[in-house]
Amino acid sequence: MRGYRLAPFAVVGLGSLALLVLWGSPASAQTKAYGGRLSPVPITVAMQEAVAGRGSVNAVLSDNRLTIEGTFEGLLSPATVARLHMAPRGVRGPAVADIMVPGVTKGSFKAVVQLSNAQRQALERSSLYLQIHSEKAPEGNLWGWLLPQEVKR
View 1: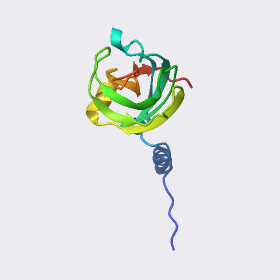
View 2: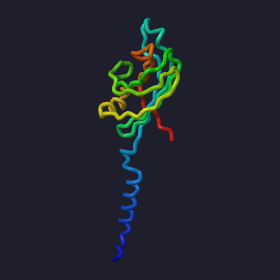
View 3: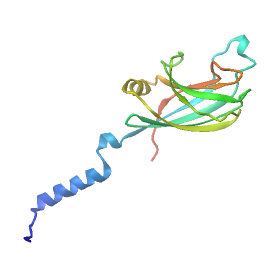
View 4: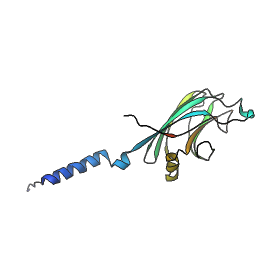
């Protein structure tokens, strides 16, 4: 078998290619962090005995994959489900994904949601929110919009 020598520029080019393969392309490797405070939904007089509590949510977007983690406490009845909704801040909108939550009044949750391109664009416009529902507040107990967060290194 005959040996080959690579020109120095070819070695540098191959090394750069190897680094791109190991690290991935810059666009695909980017992640964005989002977070929000969960507070009681706007209530009517009839809902005052059903809606209470607080919580927080953090999310990381990588491509169209959204990893969500959150906590809640102080609900007046056990949580039933968390739902990701799409709407501008302060406005109710349609649910786009259900997230399992423990049936307790204080707990945490974690989920991965595959977003459509329209849902990803809504997230980037701060138009996705999380809402936790409970037994006494089936129309929603806590809600909070996912807002861009500074990534700390």
